Image 1 (cartoon, rainbow, N blue to C red):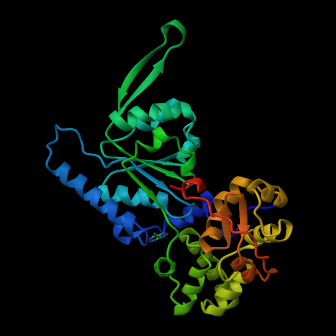
Image 2 (spheres, rainbow, N blue to C red; image 1 turned 90 degrees about the vertical axis):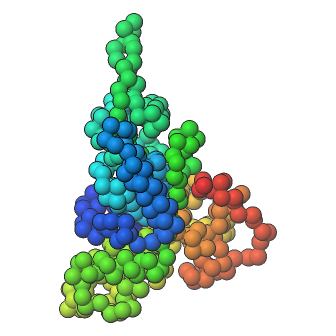
Image 3 (spheres, rainbow, N blue to C red; image 1 turned 120 degrees about the vertical axis):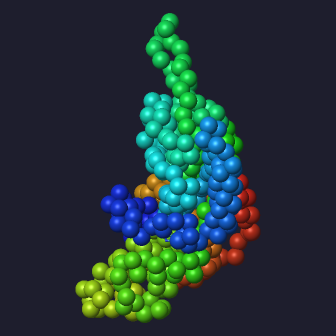
Length: 359
Ligand code: ADE
């Protein structure tokens, strides 16, 4: 089954480019995640205040390393940029898979200026051999580089500037515990509230010069955005195109409904893959419990994709339950999709938070 979805939380580089103009430029412009923003503002102000008491000969103060985890599309990269802007330092962006060898990391680390931010996306995909180099860099800002081989093998120590590592991951459970313990601030990003998404869409509509939107229309887009700003902005662009072609540029609730029905997105933001996933559990496995691998095989989908990009939102809606014995659809999901109600069955205990791979 194709995984190109209009409600996919991941983005292609071309889409990332389009989103660039819509991103908040400063922490004041950042909408949502209020607890995280408050923690960050305190930590940043404290660093700035300590730095202001130092003279130029002393070691530069740096913000503690930060680990951001949570579903894709919630703004981890955006946050790294607004943190850099707030600190007044440069942000260097890379990812776990891009740092294939220790020397890749050395190249990145030696480019850092004091106080800079190093953002490593998908940090759970950092090769173990590279992880070993990261630890001394995070703790003491030094890197032990191996030189020569055989009898001449030795290591040379290189110092790097004090920096802040911001690690981002959708799979916190896959991070090794020595890595996890080296972050001073760890935060789980939550899906955005409806009112935050409306706020983000209002800002984006204004940046895109969409001034003919009726007040309810942005709320209707927000309801279909799966708590994810990246999806909200993508749906907004589709609605804008539809409005230009079919409604003389005027965005009303009817235009939103028609545009997104055409894309196969329902009133709660579910698409064909979500519906097929829930229907498979309901109809093929009698509502569950069923193992993820079995559902993935039925749908000819990758289990990791289902776990990362389909299940989080269905769990959030209360349409899916993860139990000790496997996945189960809920009565609520059956009602929403017009499926036959579930037979009353033995109560299955939901998994604990740690067993779901979340912190
Ligand atoms: N655009 C995308 N995400 C945003 C956010 N959290 N705040 C403001 N604008 C955004």
